[in-house]
Length: 300
Image 1: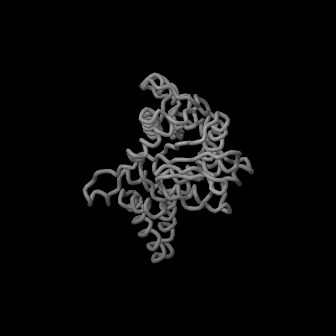
Image 2 (image 1 turned 120 degrees about the horizontal axis):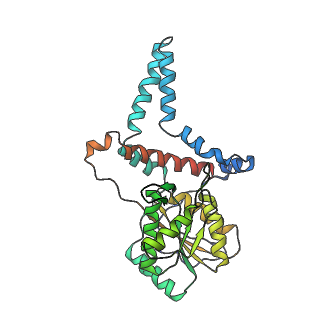
Image 3 (image 1 turned 30 degrees about the vertical axis):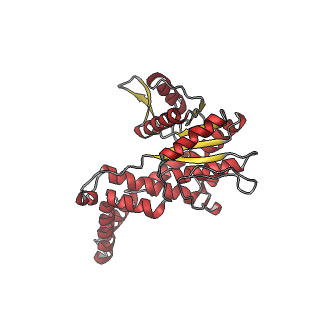
């Protein structure tokens, strides 16, 4: 169901998802910003996420084996088991269900209502694609490029724009801990125009994370008279993205309705026993879910 008209007591509504509250006291992101160490965020995430914690436990256990063999084995064996399980798609799917709010894709009826609403109020809606990463130089093309994750988001946003007639926006800068090269939104704009023949109406090139995506993009769209925003991102990222957009809407004047348009929801087709074997896909899913969970707790 698409957002219903908002009222003063209920300024933002989102569809196709259940949003869980994020506690403001965990706003570690704000602390990083106030201390001027935002560029440390990628390094900190890399240290907190698997496999680094399990490798540390294995090394500690190996050191203890020389002096306290039972204690050493109590560290080594569970760490090795967790290292194995933490690289499987089965555990990744379990963590997704346990740690992230469920989301569902827009249905044909939702698309029809979006198209109808846009026809009735031309210029009041926008589809916002959130950046997913860039390649400063793709040698095969000789220019900068989007990562596969960002490209998938752009493709879905373009398809959604074509199906509903709603103009498209792309939000993405250069990210924390990265310098040089064209902003991600500029790359997306070039690809959309040259390869898909669909220019992007709004390109936001300054944001470095999800919160900045929301804050800057909502400001741009509010000034453009937009009153309904359809947010496009991967399903695992959508809860945090919607929370950031809701906060951005509340921080400014006027009412803007929000609709979640998650993508990338398909599960890999594997035989049951393969799901319990380590794989690149399994490790990536586990890391992604844990990163999103930590991001929500920290207020990022």
